[in-house]
Length: 152
Image (tube, rainbow, N blue to C red; front, side):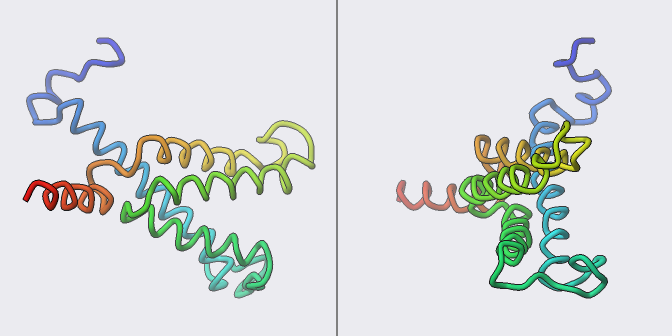
């Protein structure tokens, strides 16, 4: 079996390669969005360990406050698949900025300077910026309604 074939049992169960790709795309988008929201929730609401100390939040007029807004609300938009491409582009910028200003100055490889998560998010957001939200998303619903409206 090559890497591009689906086991016969999977196709018999109705799991075509196309359906698996849709599921994988959706799981990646929703999972990344939910995890990213947790970083924003720490900064904005002081939950999940808070920002630096339990219950502490990031000051709103700072880059950390802006990061919290981008992470929480950008993550939420990714979860529902709304404005996915522009949101993903913004979040790529945030993650590359975080890597360049916080992690890279510490030297070494990303795994040594703690920057691997920022880069991993940047790669996921790059995929979403190129591929879009996928079939299971509000972006898809809006696109289909617009197309149907043009045909009427």
